Length: 178
Image 1 (cartoon, rainbow, N blue to C red):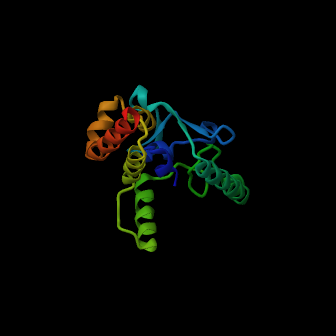
Image 2: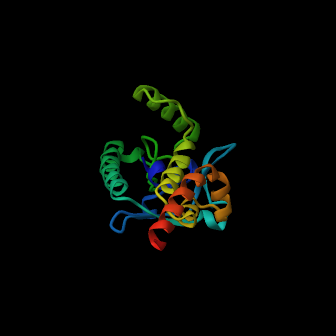
Image 3: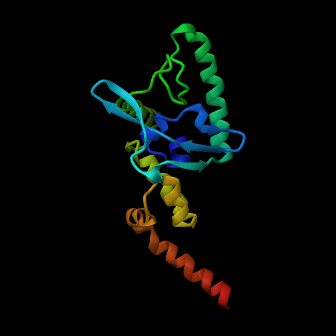
């Protein structure tokens, strides 16, 4: 859900810590990403300056995060001394970083159980961007949410949506100038 509601990359989601999330103000900070090394998953700084960003959360995303935190707190109590206290929002049963390949497999299984077409986890990011652009959210804002270095990256990636947006622009001009 958070992938669709924020457009975060999988590695950014898996590196998200509770210190990065403010459920009161409804925002989160992207400060790191999960990378796979020869020794396993590791947290690293984002590759670009624009990847470090603040993302405003919807009310539904905030409510879901609150519920997730409550569920995770119960898991921490059950795990007792086995819990790795690194503050990750999305963690294993003992608080360790999740393996991105395992997440992809579980995501595929979830889609299959739901009876929906198979997509890549990354397609949730594309879904977020597409929905925002179709709702006429300024491409600069979408670019900032996605952590693109420039708005041209966003526009190049989602240019197939622009013809419909031009129809809306023409209608808006008609309404304004008539």
